[in-house]
Every structure is written in structure tokens, then in C-alpha cells.
Length: 449
Image (cartoon, rainbow, N blue to C red; front, side, top):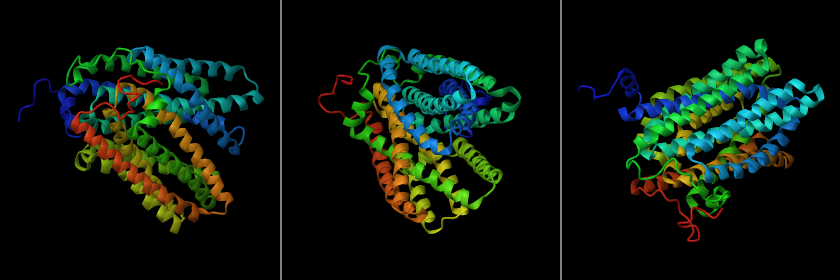
């Protein structure tokens, strides 16, 4: 069959991996560049964060997680105020440049601080980077679910997520290879430049977005969204659909924290040498990145098309049920590696792009406000619940086996939440219902917030 008009070699190459339309190619390209820049910027500074964060001692990390949650609560209302007053392209640029200005401040403080001050500065940088990571990635996906509809998301989000994986690999490689020769300051400058590239991509993508709409001009994408500054919280609590997305994220974060502490314990028991532990974790990261990238490029859209949103979304919690059940019986390194690889690949290649599709069928206000609240505040709340719950279970005398058994019913509840969400999303997409479930008091108001 002859190629369609406008098809080029890039399109024909991509067509072998994903079901893409020629008109979608420019928006897809800018979306991939956008997420590549954002993830590269984060992974450039992540090792710097980790090194600075442990200067005050490993036991300090739990309090740093608490500080991160409080910072998320502080940042969410100002961002909602920007969403209320500014067009999409402008409030994203303001938010990103705010973080860029923060990096410049940290560069000055790092140059002027004493060794004692560096410990506290490191703690502040750890909290800031943890907020930055979730925030800028959440904003990216909010724009994706605003630009692409549910059907496009099923076909394209896997390939877009592959851009994030490549960005993460490049960013971490850049720091690993250059930090000893150029120092942290130069790397912070590189992160700033990458964020500016992301802002440029947003501007270009916003100008292409209207052409992707099924009814061009029906919804003024660049008009201020309006609504209240607390709409992210109020809409999440009043909508069964959004609330269940919050439950999904909460259970993901809690079980992630459980597994993180179990991994630390198993690795400490299995490897007495720090270098051996570092190499062990590096091999896991490499395996996860390679498998994730292959699945994102070649399989994610096909799996979504074959299984649908509900079953694809339920894959990750199902991995958790099997993984924690296995760890409860065989708490050894081999079981841990298999579980970690399956969970992380399942999250990056399947769960993350699929859960973003959930937001394609809510209002534009909820795509930015409720989504940001769930991705940041609810996620970090799950971290806190998981870390303190794990400490409590250890205090009560539960070991590796007992904690894994506790995690199994949590994972089963997570499976049920996934299936409910997937079915509800597919119903909304079929009915073309873009308004979230709300109480009568909120209907038609844009949110009291």
C-alpha cells in the first residue's frame, strides 16, 4: 500500500513500533523532547541530592521525607493559583523557571557555605529536589493528558515514556562521568539549561495541540482555567473517580516504601562490602532500564490495545501480590531481584503511562489541579505512611516474613482499585464524558476550592 501524503522516513520507522498518525508526529516529537529534558535535568542532580542528603546521617532520611511532604503541601496552593489565573503555556513556564531560579540560589549558597552549613544546606537541597522531581513530572503528564485524548494516550504514551527513560539514562550518565572533573556547580547549570529546553518544548507543543483536537476550537486551551486554589484537594475528596486514583497512588507509595526497606535489609545481610552493594544495585538499575526501554518502545501500546486500561493497570499490583507472597516464603536476594525488576519495569513501562490515561477523561481543571495534588501530596503521604508503618511493624516484632504478609492484602486491595478505575475510565472514554463526578454543590462552578 503506498504511503499516505506527508509520510516520511521517520514516520515509517515509528509506525513499525507504534500506531501513529502522520498529523500526530510533530506533537509526539515535542512531547518526547519535553520529557527527555525534564528527566535529564532531574537525574543530573539526583546523585548530588543523594550525596548531600546523607551528610547528616542515614537515620536523618525519615525526617527528610516528612519535610518533603510539608513542602509539597506548601507548594500546591500557589501552583493552583497560577493555574487559575494564567494560560497553560505561561503557568508551566513560570513554575519551571521558579525551580530554575531555586537552582541558581543553591549554586550561590553552596559556594559560600561553611562545612557545618553544608549539612543543613544538603538537607534543604534533598527536600527541594524531592519536591522538584514529582512536581515537574506531574506537570508534564498533566499537559500530555490535556493535549492527547484517551485513544491517543493508549497508542502514544508508551513511546513518550520511553523518552523519559532515555532522559534518565543520559542525565545519570552525565553526572557519573563529569562530576569529579567539573564539579556540582557546572552540573546544576546543565540542569537549568535542560529545564529551559523543556519550557521551549512546552511553547511549541501548545501551538500544535489545537490541531490534535477532535473539535478544533471547541475548548480554548490557552484560556486561564480558573477555579479555586484548593480545588485539587476538594475535587479529589468529592469525586469517587479521583479519590480512587488517590487510593491507587497511596497504595503504590506504601508498598514501594515497604519494599525499599526490605531491599536495604536483604542487601545489608547479603553484602558486607559497600562496593559490592553499589555494584549490585547498579546491575539492577541497568537491567530495569534496558527492559523498560524495550517494552516502552515496542510493547506498551500493543499491551494496552490488547488488554485495555483495567487489566494493564492491574498488572503492577498483581506483580506485588506475587512478589510479596514470594518474599514472605523465600526472603533471599534472588527473590528480591526478580520482584524489584518486575515491579519497576511494570511501573515504568505499563503502570505509569496507563495511570496517566485515567486523567484524559476529567475536566481541564482537574488535569492540572487534582492531578498535581494526587501526584505530589498524596504520593508523599503514602511515603510517610509506609515508612512509619514499617517502623511500627518492626517495633511490634514482625520480621521480613510478617511484613511481606501484611503487604499482600494491601496489594490485593490495590488490584481491586485498579480494575474499578480501569473500567470507569473506559466507560467515560466510550461515552465521551469528560466531567468528573461531583457533588451538586460543585456542579458547574469550576470548584469552590
